[in-house]
Figure 1: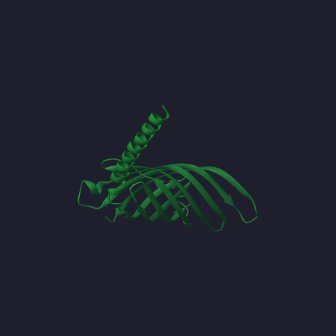
Figure 2 (figure 1 turned 90 degrees about the horizontal axis):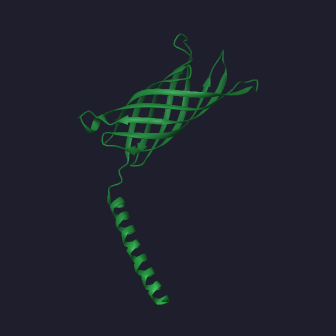
Figure 3 (figure 1 turned 60 degrees about the horizontal axis):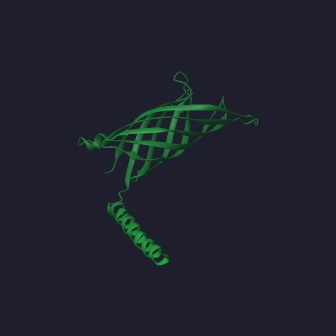
Length: 176
C-alpha cells in the first residue's frame, strides 16, 4: 500500500511539474516589451488646477511614471506653484484600453502669501484608451481619478491633514 501511494505521488508531482512548466513557457515565451511613454494631463486637485507632464515606462502588468506639474490655487489667482510626483500602477489590459489602479505620491511647495509645503498620497484609477491600436496616430487618451490624504505644513510648524481628490484628462504618446 505504501508503495502505491508513493508511486502515485511521484506521477502526480511529475504531471503538475509538466503543467506548470508549460504554463510558464507560454507566459515567458512572449516578448517582454518595455514601452516608454510621455504624457500631458490637465487636472483638478481639490481647489488647484494643474498642467502636468510625465514620463514613464510600461511593461505588460506594471506602469511606472515620474510626474512634474505646475498649477494655480484657483483660476483667478496669478500665482503658480509646482508639484513633483511618482506613480506606480498595476496594468489590467483589455483589447483597446487598459485600467490601471495606481498609488501616487506628490510633493509641492506653495510660495507667499501662503508659504507652505504639502504632501499627497493618493489611490485611484487611470483609464487609458489606446487610440494608437486602431489608428496610425500614436496618441492615447487618458482619464484618471483618485482620492487620498493630503498634508500641509506651514513654516510656523502648524500641520494639518485633509481629504484630497483629483480628476485628470490627458494625452499619452507611447513610443511603440
